[in-house]
Length: 83
Picture 1 (cartoon, rainbow, N blue to C red):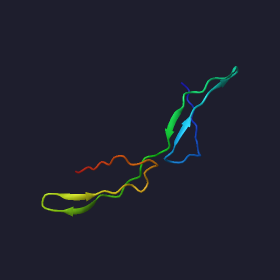
Picture 2: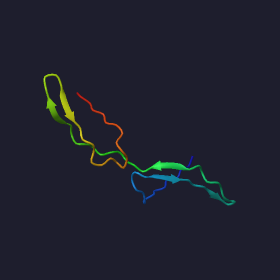
Picture 3: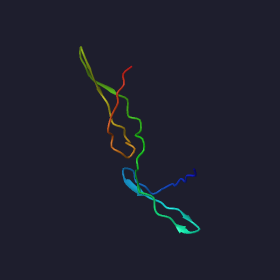
Picture 4: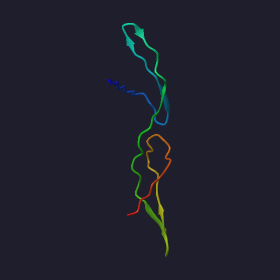
């Protein structure tokens, strides 16, 4: 099946855009597609390394920092791994 790719170069991150399209043949234009709602965002960049905030006999407190660029969307979750 043939697909088409369109590059929209005038977008703002963290904004929702509505797209729909239609096709034309020798007999004229067909109906528009149902609209697709696309949220303009990318992956967040790499955050800074975690830092030790405090330590006592039984626990450590680790401080994590949000990435400087969220990719245009709010951060909804962090994941901390320990090796």
